[in-house]
Image (tube, rainbow, N blue to C red; front, side, top):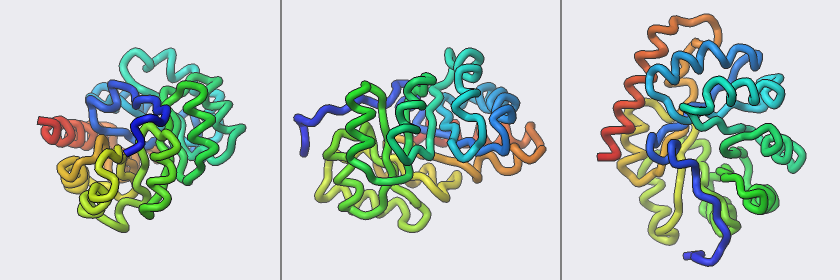
Length: 217
């Protein structure tokens, strides 16, 4: 495929764990308690999102507290200024729900991994050929794991991360179909950011960690 394009690899911990947890909180301060539980359960990659107020300002604190154990990315990036700020505050990787070759080039030039979203073959190939570290198949729940097998026909080298509606069974199926990792939100986090049971959160997180580890064998 495009062997000559510049491409920044995803962080090793994220690739090894095969699991990204997407954390959307009401306030950035709410990340801490939930991340404590996730890290204890074995989660090694978390995407905090710009839909949560204060994410930029709070990321350095999260990196200081959790950075030795977890890759911390910033997601829901949609414009160049957001991407530049995410790099400035130290994001381990960048995630955008859109297809933008300009954002891919901006991140790649800065040496930071980026995972842009897309659903159609044209969108996904556009990002991949621009140098994306991986492409986010979003919303994955609308297509299913067999879609990745179909994409691998014309795009055998495509590195994909499904996101949106990926539950425990879906995680295993997507990884078996060839995804490099799965991006999981609600099915793992549940009501954790609304005062939910943190013991139950740990159990759900541990179950996803186990499934993703098993799929790597």
